[in-house]
Length: 122
Image 1 (tube, rainbow, N blue to C red):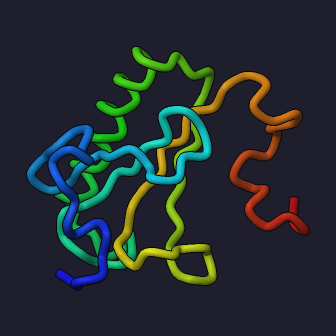
Image 2 (image 1 turned 90 degrees about the horizontal axis):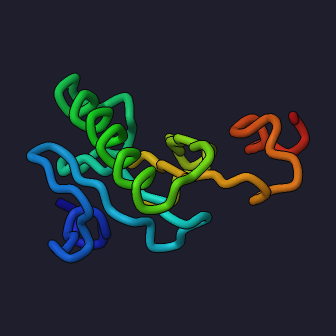
């Protein structure tokens, strides 16, 4: 567990849903109301290094978190994202998934969704 990793030392009050292999926590810098991170407990940088059990529990947490967000915030859609590697925008070398609730009118033209991560290739 690297000392500087903010995801390896989460406090109980930061955790929304707690499971043996992964947790869900609100994003510290949310891009929308309800923006949540799904984080494996084990420290590793790449999604591709997750075990099958870790991936399964993270997918289960996506479902559980969506249920909570649907109840509390009633979003109209979701973006699910993983930044894998520095060139892909990963800034914390502990893999994590973003579950970003989307609301009608939160962007004038949301068409293209995650394809807009490279603005010149939209």
